[in-house]
Length: 381
Ligand code: GLA
Image 1 (tube, rainbow, N blue to C red):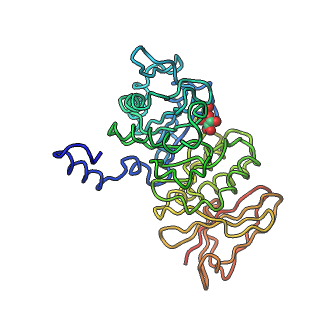
Image 2: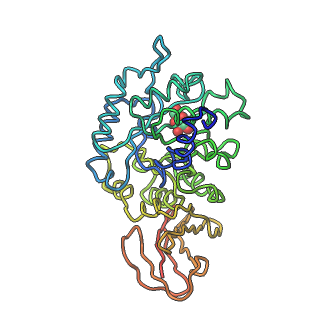
């Protein structure tokens, strides 16, 4: 960019210095919203996406921070004679869909692949990167999930960084701030370079399933990746399964507790038009979400693991620390020592699921954690 022409040089140079990453400013705290894949998979239609937007705008999710309404795979049709991507008959007019979502005060996300085909076999962006980025910008897209899928057929994995950078360049060229979500399942230690290729978030693992073992393996498996996350660039342990019915209430509490401590992007993946009050209370727990979205922007880390009992902690901007106490097997007492959190003397403890101040404690706190469950507290001086 800077090598272009004299007159433009300073303008471009200073614009670049003042706003180094248009996308990043859009994704300072971990992005929050909804994505169609976990519930609808390839059955998704534009009507489902509008229903999701309506639900978010009316059930309190929007006010709680869920802003992105994201279509995952299966919206694509073919390309017209000029090579421009077209939606399939389940979607019709993408600009109209974007306008509708924007009219609700929400943002619109879309999905593609650097390969010729997406994971579900729909048209990918291979050799159409700039054109697709331009089309997305014209439609009013605010977020792109870019999923490796069939790219292995046309690129060696050693080129993975260049391939993602190519789309980042194309998105920047549009001038529209578009959150860039890398999805390549954690290959090639993406957390080490995802930010350098313009990623605002990157999947660190394979696909989550709506089962405790899958969720727990992914969530607890994030230990050690905390150094790579920060404002505008986050590790992504995949989307939420809360409300999809495959886990028990305590297991979904564990899911939300872990994701919030991990400062993970929070993309609900359920049918928002059919939520039970219990699932809604989990997804809309403002005290948990405040931990996820905390302006200090630190990903929590594992403090201890004693067999199936784990304690995780996330330092927050006001000097308090959010703590998760987990049992990965049966119901057990789980203990945290305040000195491990950097506190001496007596501290104040608040239960973020019970929404209750528990009072003052000295030295340590012990929670009675149900099977596969979690207790989340906020500890402050
Ligand atoms: C991959 C991704 C999923 C989802 C599907 C869609 O498996 O990891 O999150 O996007 O593709 O086909």
